[in-house]
Length: 125
Image (tube, rainbow, N blue to C red; front, side):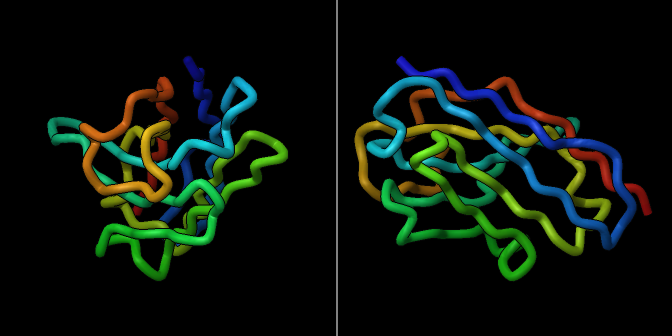
């Protein structure tokens, strides 16, 4: 069992940056592939980015590639999402997720066993 707690969301203007953090409990954080998803009001939850256990492999949704960057610090049991050049369409609740069964994450939410409670990101125009 692992618990995930997101932080760092807020209200920003278009073009600003934010860094989200996701702190994980437990001693085996380094064995989890991690990911960020987001859900806008009235829409399905969408993949944003994922990172392998070691941090050596990452993948991004096309809509955020080149603007968002996922990273992890296994010593701190934390995964990050650096979001730059934010747009109003990035407004959503952002969730981190953990998959203890694979070394490299995927873009499918169904692969992830553990989820945080989410943090709201609102980008005004």
